[in-house]
Image (cartoon, rainbow, N blue to C red):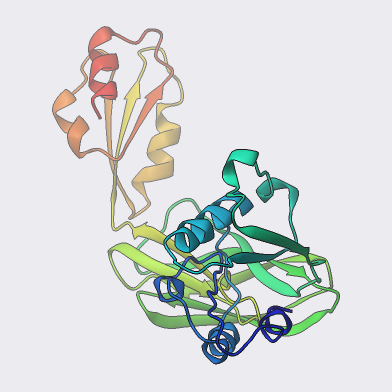
Length: 275
């Protein structure tokens, strides 16, 4: 439609192309031929601008021009949340033609959310990641691929099927090979909307967890925590009674369990808040 509009003008007329990306290369007058070339280079984008911002941007550009006849052709689907325009936004010396375009349904498959099956990611252990893949189209997806990259290297691959208009929980497993902070990306392939095909995340691969259990004097469950943690190589287990708390180890402790304390002293409260 933009090409059809431009073709109604003379070869000597000048044009400006403006998209929601507000790219610098579009901030100049160009010929009819250059306009068509730039138009062909426009890609689908996630950028969103209000109609008033678009009008102001183009009016500011045109107001600095010495051209006598200035016109704006505004092509949009004029969604309600972006189409609020006040009279103060309009320069009445510049003609504006608003051309509504009905939005066509665009097929899109994307990763909605990602989570680990377990709360702790441990070094040299197998982990399972879940990803919800949503199919916003009227076609079933068969044998779609979900690729997992950790620290820029592909480490796993899973396939999935998801019917039209539905979502699918896809699980993918891998083994943690790097201690500390790891950077991950889950990728799918979906055309033409590609900007939402990657889901980025990070996690801290633990080698040990320093755990401190502080037991109340009347507790009967102290042994439960000891049994839970002492035989697990992930935990370095220590315990105190609430009558003899070693505050010096707090700074090096990853998890503190207050087990059936009758009262919490101001000293314990202060040290916990300082962590």
